[in-house]
Length: 225
Image (cartoon, rainbow, N blue to C red; front, side):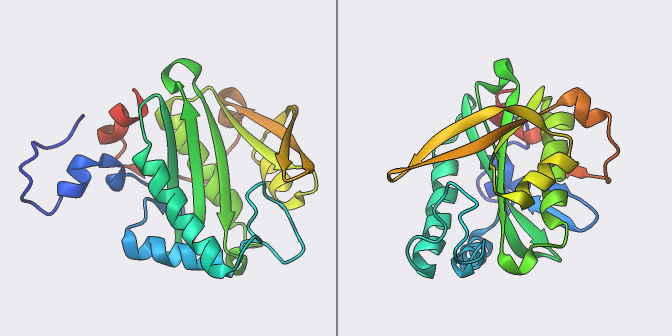
């Protein structure tokens, strides 16, 4: 793993041991990076207040199940689970979305056997107060820039409920194409999602806002590269 020789007694020890804490993806308005503890608690609170309106079910994750504290704890557990289970052959990178240094949501990039398969899957959510302003599209584009321009992905996949018009619109704007459907069970209900695919060639054929990625080189081994 690239980085400084570890001595265990300097302020950069966390980044030395886990270089993903030094990874940042910046757009004109947003920054994507691993949240620190207090920021993670703030993200959990945002999710607790809601990531979609009551009566809607736009995600497979049951965001309306339980109360605000249950949803907040779910965010904490998912974040810790992803980091704790990380391996070069199967990883899930959950980055906080920061607007003016304040948490606004989360994006996830995940892959299995990435050095061979070269495919990633994306997912995301934003707090209700941050929706409808183009932040979701900007955050997804930043994540895709990391995947295609730095990790060397061949394709990015996403799955979207057919009636989730907002996420469908984001995917269309970014150039995703239909790639079949998937069926999942939630209780005794069958949920059908459109499976969408964006290739590297399609990504590179479009104009994108500037994205600056820092701290990536030290992370390469964690991605199996």
